[in-house]
Length: 389
Image (tube, rainbow, N blue to C red; front, side, top):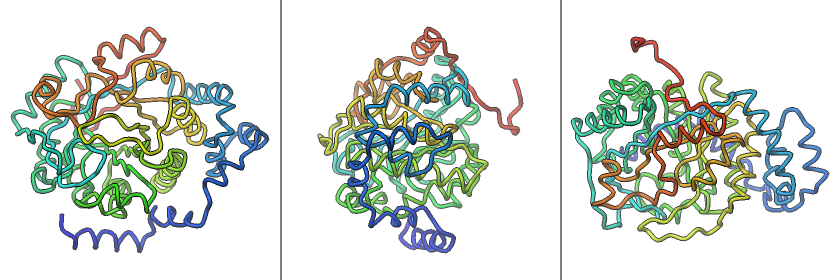
């Protein structure tokens, strides 16, 4: 994707209004002072409200609100059961390529890392997809690539989507930022969802973390979920990589980004993910670590702010943590995960993007859910263009 195409997309975004305007409207807002100024009475007032606004959400992200995790958890559980029932959607990631042109200092795939680079062809993608379907029974797959338009072109990704739509009921994408026209073609090929991690909403901190490559364009990446929404994606996933900068601030902007999209595009399903930095070959150390208590607080605060939005927790978290989070508002989890191109077998011969924490299979995840009184969901929708079994 060349600079002209990015410029054209951003010019169009500026005319219609975009989330970048929302982010920059907080330029003079002292987020840290607000968080430190929250008192117990403020938290109690928010917890007494039936509907929360953005300021209420930030209040629940404050250090003071950490004293109220139990009442927050009780309400989050009630809201989750009321809106989603005792169910958990299961999916698995599929890394089909790891070529990357970015310089992200925290990632095991970035251009400077001397790892084995690989890209699956369509027959390998088809074979691996069938293997996943036959061995796990899962109907939802998330397709991932490194960020390289040269090697993983939109045409390549679109062809992979078409191949996998013959196997799975739902195919979602987690790839580099595309144009609206490219997202529309992905939808036509059978993709129904996309996830775009901004990684870091702090615009000043973003540049040194992403010194070069397509991902270095902060504004173009930030606008990607909205381009996908206009192109017809059914589900939009967002997230910040927790540990790069102040996690409370990043959680706040992730939440209001989700709120912005849900209000502007009422026919889409919006979800967030809450990934924490994990060890990888890049050797990057978290600059603003978030502990388990902080992660729980973030998830609870978001559930109370957006009761009907999805929350995804990946295998970056331990099995103990994921088991605990089942009750607290999470709606989607992965299983049988691998971050190496080609899956679990490939991990023996090449570096993965980051180290998996919870290595359970989809079947083991399903059994855990049954044991906890929840129903694992392998397929949550059926497109009209696909014949019913």
